[in-house]
Image (cartoon, rainbow, N blue to C red; front, side, top):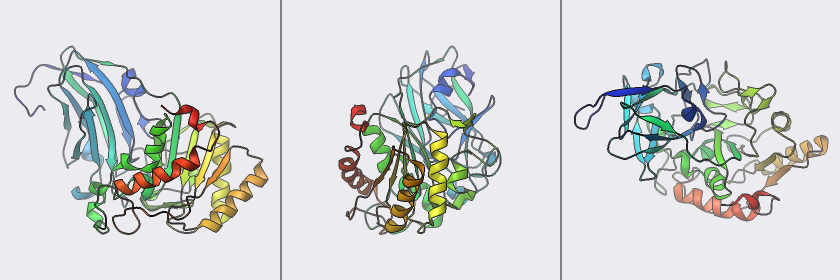
Length: 354
């Protein structure tokens, strides 16, 4: 359904197209022959096209079981231009991504979700973005795009997710119905770190999450690391594939964790990655749970002989927030600037900088 000018003859590109699949951020999309879907804020797709100006995203919003004000929000750019923002709507079947650009390269990501609805249960949870294909001009084709080879996995809660990052300083906590629109996934300091060091970012993060589980129906991290949803695994054999080179975890803001959920999750993640994958735990930027998390990481280190586990504590920093807790985009930039000093000291990371 084209909304600008006349409708040229069109052809469909399926989600099984190799350049679509290769352009997906790893580990946080469900890929089938008929659709791709994700409930992970920050999940992305970068894909190029030729022989077409028009690129239209086909979506299935009938699967979303949440009030319209809480529907997921997309953002995309064409040929690295300014990002456009669109909240999906009930009964919507398509989103026009490009209309006039020559050989458009589309960079699309899931900008925001409501944290309250189920994003975990079943093959297609009730708060999800489901994509069924692309419509292009007759003769249009996909082309591959260049993406970093090494992968950086961010794991966290609403702060890592970028919730409320689109708000202004001291604006106040968003109303429950406004969380999806208040989010800006790519403002996240974790995303900025991955970009700075030259990695391809992927993410498991959502509002209200903690080491032992949280909102959205998500289970504890020792289970979630293995599962995209309650029915669909992330694993190939007994490993995450592709395997992240860096795993950054920031949890604890939603309650000081006991030792067991932390050590269990770290042990499970180590089994799912490689011995040289860097596991980096960062103390919540508020300082919450500092003693408990430090103790748990030390306990894991002593019992595992893991030589690639790191604990980062930014100590006391001041940053802009919407509500005294959730960083604005500027607040995330402050956290990122502070974190770089600590991350530069981790052997190997600086060698990946662009």
